[in-house]
Image 1 (cartoon, rainbow, N blue to C red):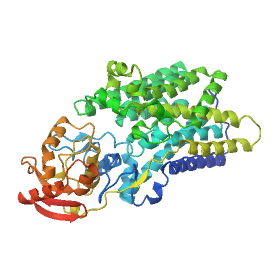
Image 2: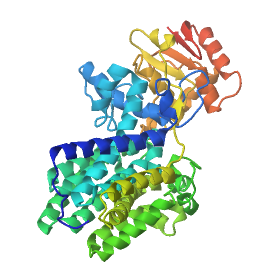
Image 3: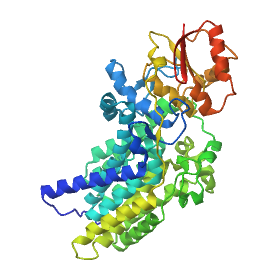
Length: 533
């Protein structure tokens, strides 16, 4: 990594061939990370394993799938593509859908051509490919050999934390914005860098933006002239403004606006998690760094220092270490004081959300180490051998089984029977921040109706209050309250079993109460029964 150095120009055929190789390696890394679940990709979602009990298995992938589906659906009906007119009605106005605008564009045609399951699975695999390809492209622009750049691309593609996030969180799917921003800076495309950086908070990833903005400023300081740095500062300021706007429009005043430190304690990683190969408490605590990868990164850091590129060494070194320390959260002395004293951090509950910043730095440092080996001998075969061995070794070092082919929301006769206006109530009722409600989002795509429920950690407080009231309907203790405009009720027996929150016979009692109150069975299909008036 020599400032100002550029890869030697090659023939167009060689460049095209290398680009094809980069895409192939990145996609292969994605297939390795998701194996063996993709072999059943036509049958289920690529997501965290969970039982469905006769219907769609609840999971964050269904919530994100809903967010990606909405923009295209809204455009087709001539409505605003950035809003959700169905969830939490009538408690709230149409909520902004910040998660859907970026990846909703490619999702829309994929969904229409392939259906929701394959559309999701293709987006997941493409996110792996984009992360690897853009990282490799960035490292080549910096001046690394092809072997070094491919190694760095493989590290960022295979990063366990990012793979875990891709099972259902947008954070993993848009991680490619980090190398895209750095690539634009390296090419002196400050406007493009600003757009890529601003896309992070505009997609609702405010915690990641807290790390991405300092990373970009530090990188620009190490790699660009001072005139360029001030331009980067302006781009960073625009990203800060975008983050504040999203905070005020989406988070402020919602159930996610008043985080408690108890929530931080729940999600904080432990020091042993960095060397433990396994999911453990969940994908948020998945901070495993591998055993070979940190060694390569350390070698790369030493190499940068010896090359007198100390500015870049400091930038990447701090970017690799600081997010790992902060991922410890409540287990890091002084973190609570920082969390309470720095308002943007105090709005977060998952300390590990800065780990993508650590992984892009670790990838770059590992690439420097591979570059060092590739240039240590004049033999022409050595770079290819280094790249091949490094990618295979990293795949073994970083892979953790995370994905399964998860039961999808198949076409259901009950939802097909939902015709006409009127709100839909789905049983059992869950509070809006519980992921079991995501299954309802999956089925709602088949017949969209306004619903008093939804699944969101930024739902309005009124939605949480009404969920507590409606919970009694789940077991037939109360009838459906009048005044909410509810015309349909869907009983999901699979969700009673998935959650384990309700006693045996609750679903039977709920249906009995509905019939006693004059509700008429419209259709029953498997574990789902739909009633109407």
